[in-house]
Image (tube, rainbow, N blue to C red; front, side):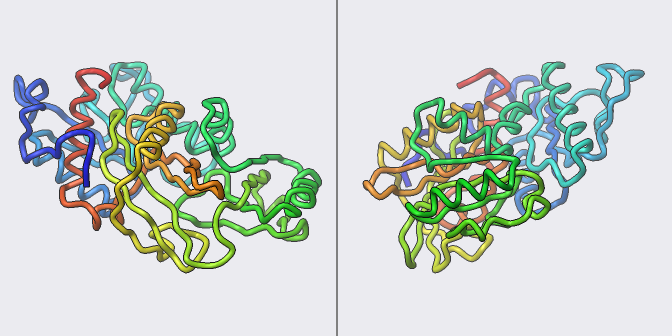
Length: 318
């Protein structure tokens, strides 16, 4: 697969700026909620590039104004040189707010984050992401978000006459919790919707196979892409879809880069789908994307490419 930047070797010369003075002294916080495959790959990639990564649960971080900088980050006597955000973790609104506050504080203290707190907030809140994509003029499914059950049913009553809708959890991921809405009675209760009804026009065929595209973007370049094919209308790999190597068109590449830019992300997994007119549309922008399925279609280490790009980010934007 063609990429916009060369695949990194074990110790790429492009990282000379980071290696000057010893990259081993660069300590990288990898924020996560569990040691899954992606975190293990990320830790190994940074070690291979000469840095010292430390896995940290954001839930274990705290504000402590008696300490230099006002933060306590487990595993770090001082601040990390760089932070990678793999996961925020589950929790109450208060807990999530505090974890994001820690990320905001790190940025205020000058620690480079991949991705930054504001970008994560934009992508995690699907309603804001849809708003920003529309503001950027990017084609995306028609979207309706409301906190009113009556309004949600009115939307379904009006819009389902033109075709089905998809209801998604506002903060959901990996295809979990999606509902196909074909009539107003399919709208769940306010409690089941967790207080918010996020509805999008369903884009795709009326029968299998179903397909969309995931494009991984890093520092303004396309790293890799795949198509996800499934017998079910939910096409996430975690839900059983098959990853297939793909070469995005120029239009698809430009759309993915523009979507990442609209969200303010450094790294993003951009999901595209083909509209009825044959052109691509942006389904979603993920600020903490996985790449286990994509790695099965790539001939290089995606984790090392992302780690190398993150170290480059310390020298400034691309």
